[in-house]
Image 1 (cartoon, rainbow, N blue to C red):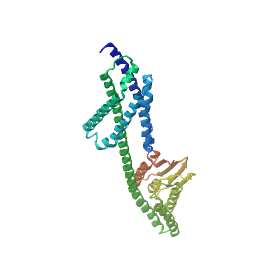
Image 2: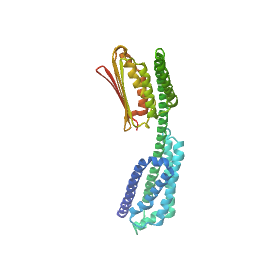
Image 3: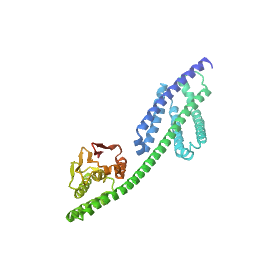
Image 4: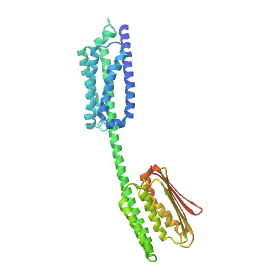
Length: 386
């Protein structure tokens, strides 16, 4: 290559390098913005597409002309306007037809071959446009007056230039398609998980209710033998509890004040049942009754204290404490452990089911600690209600 042509080649290569560098930076910034605007894209896809094409037009008509540092001929803008239209056609052809119809995972070779053919077609068409506009000749005359042009060299640059844009357009389309499919799969997984959670909760609730009613009816049954008046009161409280279960238990959440009322009715029923040698200490304190909580989520722990903390021959004490402050509910129970009930405690299905419910409904927003100190079983449950 003559020295003069070599100098021209280096000059045009530098301009080409500046354009590609500018394009790469713009594409990188645009990609970051897309990742940060996923919610916006989902809500306003048409606006997002419009902004994307405006961004590419900004590169063609503002950024690239600045790299030349000269006044470009009108043909430059006409050429890039036509190129922009063809890129739009290729983009929507790719995402609207090729990607849905040709699975690139199963038919990767066919898909890539199709993209190559489309790119070659675009290069051929834009070469014809360039010849009609005589763009390269006019640019060459402005950049290097009185020097001969090299048609092959110019054709090479145009082919690379167009191929890079076609590649970027196809890459953006593939990325958009993959993200869209990934979002669909994630949404499907979330729906399946939600349905599974609902099914598990239904099963767990179905296991809790028979267990609760069995114990409560036993309490009333024992009262009818020696305390008729107390049994009437117990039946009234039982009716209130059944009304709560029928009306509210099917809901995911109930008002805290209704749940507390339910617990108080249960404790009152147990007062009728416990022998005189059992001391019952109850402390319930809350000023945030309008908060919501999962129904019957506290019952099992309180019921557990009565089930395993009562002795008919030895003085014993059961302590129950419920406190709600700043949206945090704290339940504390304490009862003595008796030898004849040790083995059954480890097989307590009610506690296991309630812990499953807590994990499903509150996940990381609850804390449960159970321990034994000096033969006293202590339970601590914390739930963040807001």
